[in-house]
Length: 194
Image (cartoon, rainbow, N blue to C red; front, top):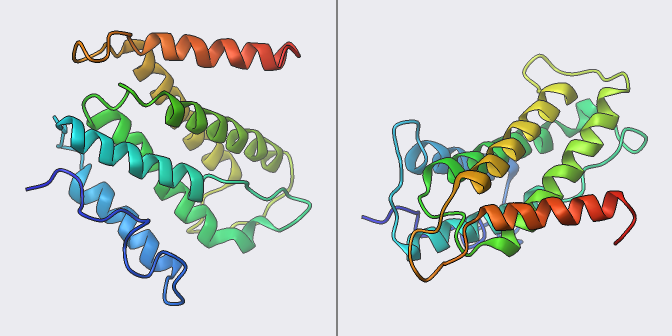
């Protein structure tokens, strides 16, 4: 039995630009990933091939679901209900992958850097949203709740990078060095060096 589903959200029929793709169908897919493969009781001790499949899932979710988030001057919060729900489900899947898939931090520097940038950007725009008046449906996450969830995922990933050591001799460099590189590049941007 495979530890990762045979299809990812980017190869499931109906999700590659087909007309029958729906936000509800994609949300169901994300929730099945969360519940069936990344449930609370599961710690995935996966082989390298399975880890690579999960890295592909995270990479695809980062590219397609954590992209630019509109600002308050463009659209009202309440009109983005589907986007907000799918973004929250995406954050939950990503968080669980980094907690439950053994070896996920090894050899995934490019994806980790991209994910870090997307999460920081999402957190930044959500901070802008928290400073504006927003109306929300009762079953909808507020900008503050989304910002907190984004921070939780980002913190979890950074802590994991700091605590993760290489699993094999093929990956001789501990992941804390990736963390150090991410943080150094972030400081360079803040200090105007990049």
